[in-house]
Image (cartoon, rainbow, N blue to C red; front, side, top):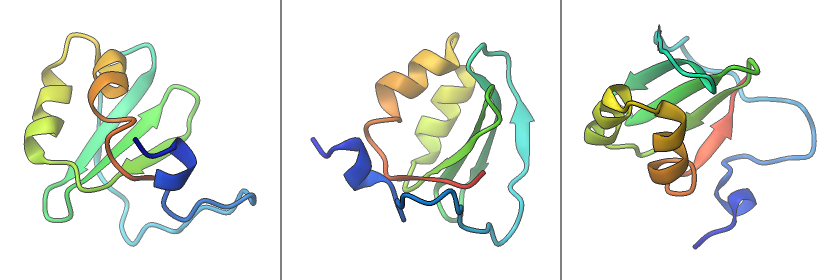
Length: 93
């Protein structure tokens, strides 16, 4: 299994985050850890805004996984089990 740092796209020590070409529309969700979730099917990009205000994009996420996340009783737990350690990601805000 890859280490978390090795999977982070464009990881650096600076606090500079890549600009997003377009703002992704996110839907508010009921979760103690996650504020909102967006998905771009064309690029298979899942965007998650956490309660802390940070926003991460997870890349190469299948539509099926996004749908399962949105239907999960615990979105934070689903993220931990099926997304966080499985897909490359980048912090965008």
